[in-house]
Length: 341
Image 1 (cartoon, rainbow, N blue to C red):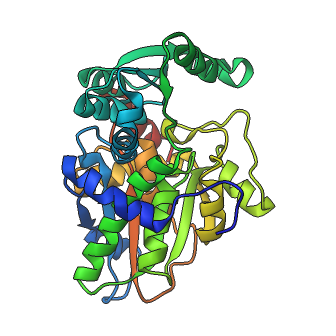
Image 2 (image 1 turned 30 degrees about the vertical axis):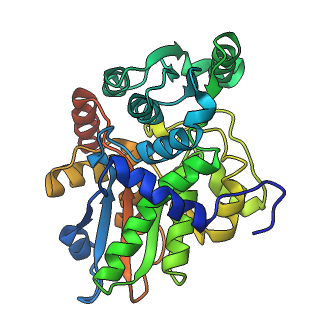
């Protein structure tokens, strides 16, 4: 993988495994008999959902945060850690800070779900907020994070554009590979969310290594598809004002460290409109009892809505990246979505 930027490798992911499993057990890989029926797959094919909503912070972000904190604990010393996040990395880095005895300050949008504020505070982090609706004009998020770093001598943590974060997230991909190999299964399609790229980059390294024949499919909201556009153009492109109910998938572009991995390993990028994500959220709730945030459900929606050909002779694996959604908001989305159908 040739690029001027040093990128994470499968060896980095393997090194991160002992760090992650020191703190948390593998997230469950759930077989979805319901999706197998809907998709009319042959009897020898299965559908699996990797449910990161199970983690103590309700999302995959904890893995990257733990690996980042473990690798920088000595460098950090008594200094605080500063990070910006739509909410899930906030709680992940807060949990990691609690485990490693570090002070954490996070910058979050003022309209983030209350559950994400509550989780982040519960692990001891301090929260500063900004107006997300004007951030594409003001750059308030990055300015505030940089200000904290400068004024409080804090070390900044990126929620996605960092090799230790990528490698930590990739441990989940190793778990998928190890479990399916144990069952003598193989993967034909792997569906995973793409925002800044930290989740997909780590998982793509593990999936491509374990099942090189698998099609690795990136999933984005229709109006936040910077990666799809970037893949088509062959270079990183930025969206100035991404829009979606998937609040965790609204990065302006993929990270410098993520792009080389994504460009090399991703087979295809597909988009899902918010209405179809809501339909999938309702289905996951009714069928599997999972109250899922939109960002978490969108990869399942891409498979359910057949956004790409599912032809093949292996299993489908879908990433459910998180479940942090306010109860009232979740049910309102479901009701509004059903009324519009």
